[in-house]
Amino acid sequence: MATGFFGDIAPIRFEGAQSANPLAYRHYQAEKKVFGKTMAEHLRPAVCYWHNFAWPGSDMFGAPTFERPWFGETMKDARLKADVAFEMFALLGVPFFTFHDRDVVPEGASLAEFGRNLAEITEYFEAKMKASGVKLLWGTANLFSHPRYMAGAATNPDPDVFAYAAAQVKNAIDATHRLGGANYVLWGGREGYETLLNTDLKREQEQLGRFLSLVIDYKHKIGFKGVILVEPKPQEPTKHQYDYDVATVYGFLKRFGLEKEVKLNIEVGHAVLAGHSFEHEVAMAVSLGLLGSLDANRNDYQSGWDTDQFPNNAAELLPAFYQILKGGGLAPGGLNFDAKVRRQSIDPQDLLIGHVGGLDVCAQALSAAAKLIEEGSYDRFLVERYSGWDAPAAKAMLAGPSSLEEIASRVARDGVDPKPKSGRQEFLENLLNRFV
Ligand code: XUL
Ligand code: CO
Image 1: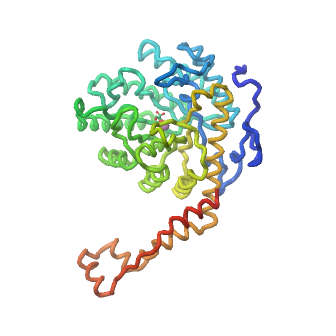
Image 2: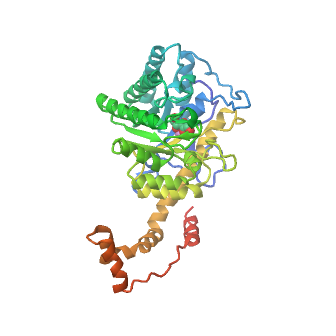
Image 3: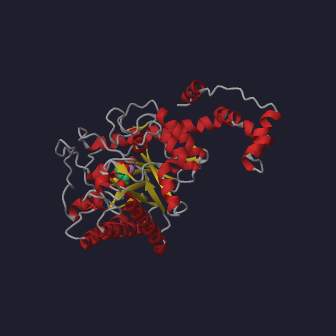
């Protein structure tokens, strides 16, 4: 039975770029083909549970602003929340969702009760997923909100917290496995530190490496086919996080021999906090074979916080979508909207409007990147810029057997005298803008 939460809003449809209807897609056409795949298959968009259904609109100065009929700590509330969530997925026509264990059920008085609650809602989800066709992009465990995790989960100085976190992750992977999740995410919420004065960072990093290895072992043991994803973030909530950015996580995975087992969930706002662009992080992951999935959002550039706003600028996203298409696409990852409406946006339809706009600019950026690749002049520029490396003498420098002395002697012998060439940045920026 319908909950009535969204009133009489009809399912969101594609109406075209000219539409002035705030509850219509202007660019996202689920079935439209781009390079032989539909937009839905390229983007694999997901609605997240936490920002939409669990966050009450509070901030560090103010009380909750959202009134939702499911706010409460009973399983009845959890079921109502799920009913509304699946209504929202259907209204948006979005094929995937994501959740943390504690977004979906009350924790109760013990880990055992939490586990039972999670198993119960998993069953409830299973039926709803079957009826609607909506799938789970990824599940995860919240190892950062409860006070027991204030000094970290796997990186806690107290081994009992490590054990507790392991138990929680085990339950969350079980639920994700049962629901056929395409991935499982580990974001190191408090896996870092506030002050070195109370921290043994060598030990803590070893603990984290061990924890991740245990998760991988468990995944194989139960036959979970989804991809384990680590989500880099440089700081917030802790000042120093061990999973700083793509390059740092790659080094960490190599150190523990996990680089073939794990991929990355890259978030726009986290890239910005790390002092990178989103496209840098995506390109770095592609180059290392680590591109897994994306958390779509944007940060406020002035505040310096992880504001998790909806993306709203296709031109800014185009370079990242170029990298994604060139890198072979996202599947079995997807595009999870890790984004929340502002706390003044208290109406149910604000939740829909945020996703409509966010999905639209991503669809726009995808189409623009496809056109850019199709037209070909940008790719030709890149090929031409590095074409000197096709010459046999150049290839020999990289492949051997040439030595540093041989290369040095070639400079005098062949009269090597490189002339500077324009990098043509403005030309390229203008070229890309033609496709948005
Ligand atoms: C926090 C963040 C998380 C993860 C899942 O900044 O991005 O919501 O995506 O734990
Ligand atoms: Co995220």
